[in-house]
Length: 347
Image 1 (tube, one colour):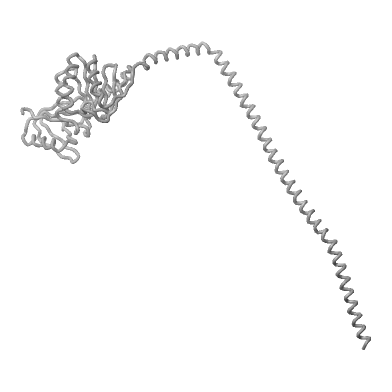
Image 2 (cartoon, rainbow, N blue to C red):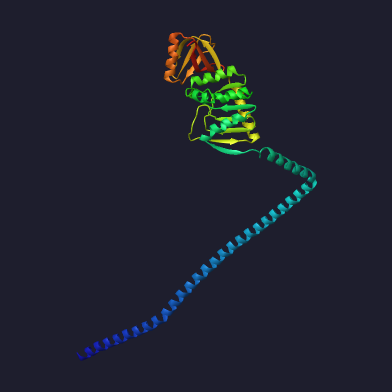
C-alpha cells in the first residue's frame, strides 16, 4: 500500500517538473522570435517605401521629359516666328525703297484732301433747339432766305398756316421758291384740316414759286433754307404752335445741308402734286375700312380712308343735296386718287 502511494507521488512530482521545464523553454523561445518578427515587419515597410519612391521618381522623370520637349518646341516656334518677322520687315523695306516716290505723292495727296475736308466739312455750326425756340428760328431763317425754303411736315393745320401766311407772302414776293411736303398716308390725312389742304392748293395755284408735294407717307419734320441752314426736329412745322417737349438739331455745314436738300428733292420728284376735281358727287360706296367716292367729271374713283364721322356725314349730305363740289385729291399711285378735302361751290 505504501509503495503505491510513493509511486503516485513520484509521478506527480515528475509531471510537475516536466511542465515547469516546458514553460521555461517556451518563454525563452518566445523572447527570441519576437525581435525576428519585428525585424521582418520593418524590412517589409522599408521595401514598400522604396518601391513608392522609385515609382514617384519614374513619374517625375516622365513629366520632366514632357516639359523639356514642350520647351524645345516653343523655342523652335519662337525662332521660326522671329525669322518670319525678319523676312517680312526686309520685304517691306525693299518695297518701300522701290516705291518711295509714289508714297511721297500719296502723302501729299492725303494732306491736300485733309485740308479740303477741314475747309468744307469742318465749316458750320451745330446746335440743339428747344420747343419754344423753333418758331423764332424759323421766322429768322425766312427773313434771310434768298433762293429757296423747303418744309416737310406730316400734318397741316389751318390755324398754323394762317399764322405763317404773311411770312409765306413775303418770301414769295421777293422771289424765293417755297416747297411744302406733307404726308398723304390715310393715318396722317385724317389728322389734318381740309381748310389747310385748300390753303396750300390755292397758294400753289396763285404763285408759280409755291409748290406743294403730297408724299406717300412721311413722319419727317425738316426745314431747309438755301444751302446754308437745315433743321431736323420732332417739331411739326405746319401743325404745331406753342411749347411742348420737342427737340431739334440746327446745322449750317454746307455739305450736310446740301445732302439733306438733295434727299428731300428726290422724294419730291417721286411724289405727285395735289389735284382738284369739280363735279357733283354721285355716291359713296362703303367697303368697311374705307369708302370710294364717285364724282361726275372725275376720271378715277376717289378713295376716302380714315375720315372722322362728322366729315363723312358732311360729305353724305352734299351727295343728298347733289351739290357742286370741288374735291382735292392726292395721287399716291397711278390707279386711284386719295381724298384730301372737299368744299362746296357756290356757298
